[in-house]
Image (cartoon, rainbow, N blue to C red; front, side, top):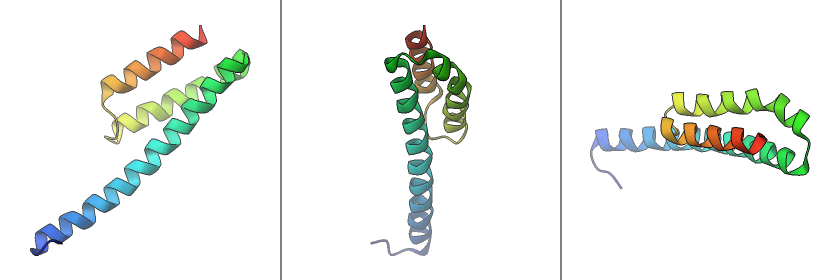
Length: 84
């Protein structure tokens, strides 16, 4: 448990950031998972329609500082390859 006032404040800030990052990460991961399921089921038209939304979420995750830009690029590349 922190003793200094600044350390207590930092702990509160870290907790807020962690919760925010978790929600952003979870939302992005579930949308990626749904897109992969659509592709695997053979529903490529539906997958192509939802692809821009998923790519946008991935980009927002990078802008918010949750993911590194290279990780996002790698995920987007793999999704595009999978879609064919």
